Amino acid sequence: METLNFRFEHGQRHVAPQANMVGVVSSGNLEVLIETAALNGACEVEIKTAAVGFATIWQAVITDFHARWSLADVRISINDVGATPAVVSLRLDQAVESIIGETA
Image (cartoon, rainbow, N blue to C red):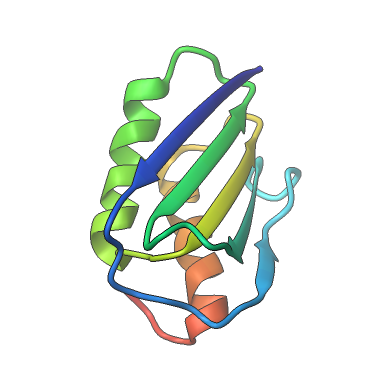
């Protein structure tokens, strides 16, 4: 298992205080938990993955996600057992949409 952490400062979009989980590890090999947190406008992402050695790909996927949503004061936890980048993006978008009710 590998743990990756990313932090993006100065997010623009705040969400209502709540937590949502989207997907399960057996569903596309990925689950995403998104919750509000006091992070001074930042968005933190923690990834626990069985696919060791793909940090560069994860960084690209998470950076693209942040560019689309620019979340502020949000913590995202991802548990992965080999999901493709497309599934990761889909699950992340679903998590945000479930909280704010709109699409990217």
